[in-house]
Amino acid sequence: MRALLCPEGLDSFNYKRYEGKTLPVETLEVAINTLPAFAERTMIEIHDFDIFKSDQRDRLCEIFSDLPDYVCIVFVYSTIEYKPDGRQKINKEILKYVSAVDFIRPDQDRLVKWIRRHFHDTGKKITADDAEYLAFITGGLMTNLNGEIEKAAAYAKSDYVTRNDIDKVVTPVLDAVAYKLTDAIVSRDNARTLRLLDELFQMREVPHKLMYSISLKMRQLLAARVCIENDLDRNRLMKMCALRQEFQAKALLSTAKKATLDEWRNAVLNCSQTALELNSAADPESRMIELVTKLAFRTQNKLQVMGVL
Image (tube, rainbow, N blue to C red; front, top):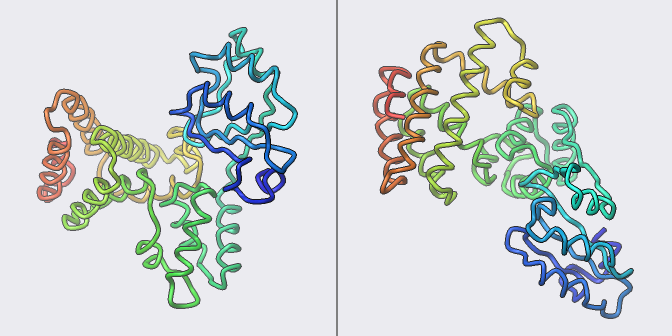
């Protein structure tokens, strides 16, 4: 759409991009009413703006009902869900002017083949296992993968891109780092635990969000252990934890084997208690450092040490 509507480039006068979280409706109106310069169309691209929860839905409905022919508005939903509530009259009115396109995530096999094909286009190769690993640490989103594939391919010295190459240059998503942290904890790898904690703080995420990610991983690992105890397959775990990719379930099941059901249960309970305490902590970041540091250096007692989390 960008190529068709803005053939002269995205830095042109006729292309506007906004973040929905900070976009006033007045700014949108100005952009809509600005005539295209030396072109037939203008394109307005807005990311993560929930039009169905906006406090100015009535005004938005008026705008959509009288759009100039030269304007194309694209709402992109990536970090928030596109979830219209058709029970409300104003939302029904908005939906009259919306054309929704859903981009479904590919399954594991298709995603791995896609990654390997893109590496081939750069003149590099990658094994299926390492392609799966790359998908895991990037969250499996093709938007992120495109740039990360280019970085890894440019960095790799040999014909094959290895897992070590990926770890050197690819930026992992928060969920992947949190999983690596919990894996390092149960593996009793103190140095790696502290290194990953530092990596989490370098991502500039607030301690509450980091605590949530760690707690989530513990709950997923508990679910994985329940599946192991009851001979439930990978698909059941994916359904229990709302996982989208098989490699996520595979990694959880592998780590869950390193501790007992009771140990995982205690870990979840203690994580929840600490998350509650963080709400009233004067310095939650220091509290996180203290908790994970204690955890890292007391792993000789296995997951019973989760009492500090």
